[in-house]
Image (cartoon, rainbow, N blue to C red; front, top):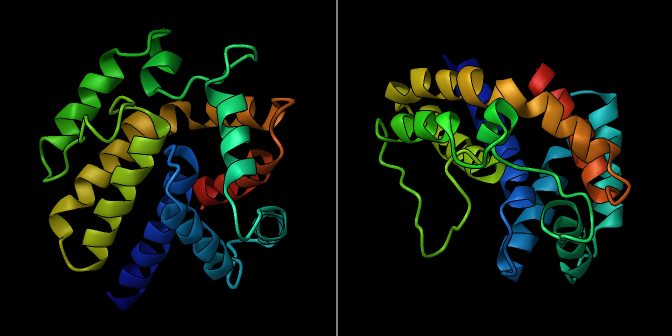
Length: 194
């Protein structure tokens, strides 16, 4: 029982890390939270390669400004001058930004208290950042004893995230503009394998 609680707390930390990288935010508080998460996770990495990647992230990211991270995020995911990396499960499933996987994700959300705040968050429910945010919140709730969400987390992982994460990660890792995110993908790969 205690081991599962510890594992779910660790999972929530990793999901929060990924959410903070993929949900675009200019807020410096979110950036400092991201730096804190990296420092916490590098103390007990999943394996040697993720430990090295977390160390590289820690030393690469500017401790006082998120400008470099925001620029790379923009270059990878939004800049039309580059070959942008699509971020929705529907795109990898059907080649459209808003498709069946978005509908499935909305149906999973209906089983929870979580809703997308359309004023604050403009990406779809099946975007990678939103999925990681939902998984972080649900996994944290599970670690606090709300076992009702275990099946929802399992289904989102197996039916939404797992279907496209490898292809998404490969595109991110191989992109010429990927430096910070290349290291993150190493951590992500270890986490998904775990």
